[in-house]
Image (tube, rainbow, N blue to C red):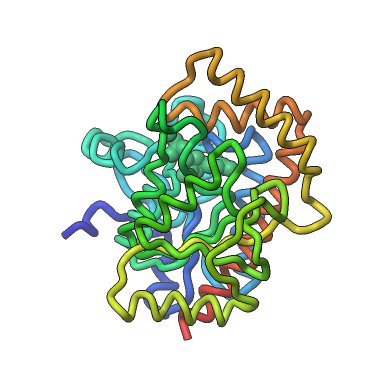
Length: 303
Ligand code: PSU
Ligand code: MN
């Protein structure tokens, strides 16, 4: 059984027994997406938001080779503080699990583990995508392939403009992944509520989102759904400002020959430094907002 590698927290195990709605959360955002101590604070606050909305949070990570579904405060602290936690995507899971190592799961790996654990809704900040100049570098996040095949709904704040948003949408279209705007027709671009691109469909309520997700899977159409939820108005950054900073971070990544799985964390941390922390404040706000929507969706899906 694949489930022999899973280890549920008490809270998540209880939720499963009682058929309560559960929301998965990733851990790359803790170990590689945000600095300490904001990463721990955010991880805990996001869990509380999910509880307040009637669902049970399950933060996912690989610890000592176990797929942990639901983490203790000590485990969150450990992932947040250690500087040698591997960033774990699909390709990394077998090595980390067989070798009894630690890993912080990306969107792709969290989707895999959530599906193994029977969890249908996953809340995060932003998904990986097709990077700019991917026609040269072939840098396309494994998150997109996972969305193509693994049946978990991912609530995020759209795609960051460190990526080529247009190519990311084309890729998702090819693989039949619906990109659904939550209360918006424009695809949000993480720090901003809009982008030059439209979503495929929009829904206005968690119920409407749940109905379409349920229908997709009932039809036997495997794979994920992207629910793109714009950052709250008051937390959004000014488009011109953030675009210039992203351009600068991209230039630096190129000059420093940053490749492979280091690209996204490098860009995130440079953007944070160049905005003097403003981007981090926005990042925290949008994740919390996604937790609100995702937990309400999980409640609807569970009905
Ligand atoms: N985007 C963010 N914050 C993040 C990530 C993406 O705004 O923390 C993380 C997620 O875990 C995502 C991963 O799955 O980066 C994508 O990495 P890559 O581009 O190497 O696939
Ligand atoms: Mn990549």
